Structure formats: structure tokens, C-alpha cells
Image 1 (cartoon, rainbow, N blue to C red):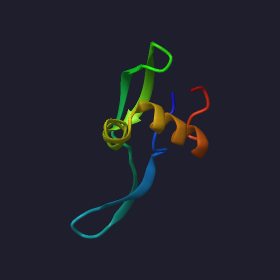
Image 2 (tube, rainbow, N blue to C red; image 1 turned 180 degrees about the vertical axis):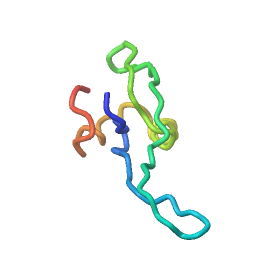
Image 3 (cartoon, rainbow, N blue to C red; image 1 turned 90 degrees about the vertical axis):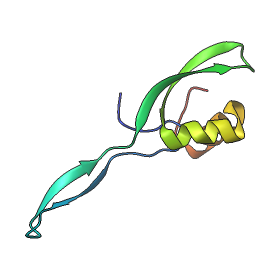
Length: 80
């Protein structure tokens, strides 16, 4: 499974490690992802999503059904 949030679409970013002498080497910034189970009330079942911390807060704010609908329209998720 790739390191992409299924709700917000956050993915890995590339940047630099900068030392005290300002030498730069490449590094990766990974999103804060969790494999989390949510109860999907409209279909009366549990679903598992790979979601970032900000995606969990978005689900708590907007609700699971609205968030999945927006994620599907943005192309982040295809199943639900």
C-alpha cells in the first residue's frame, strides 16, 4: 500500500537535510498516516481507510459520508 492519504491525498514530499555547515542532502517527508477502521452507517458496515491525522479530523468535522463523497470526486479514492 502506498503512503498516500485516501481522504486528503497527502503524499510524500522531497526536501533537504541541512547541516550546521549548510550542506544539503536529499530526504523525504512522509505524511502522518494511520490504518483506521470507521463504521459506515449508510451501508451498515466497517471500512478500513489509510488516512492522515488531518484526514481523521476532517472526518470528525464533516462526517464520513460527506468526506468519502468529496474524496471520490477529487480522485483520491475509487471504491466507496
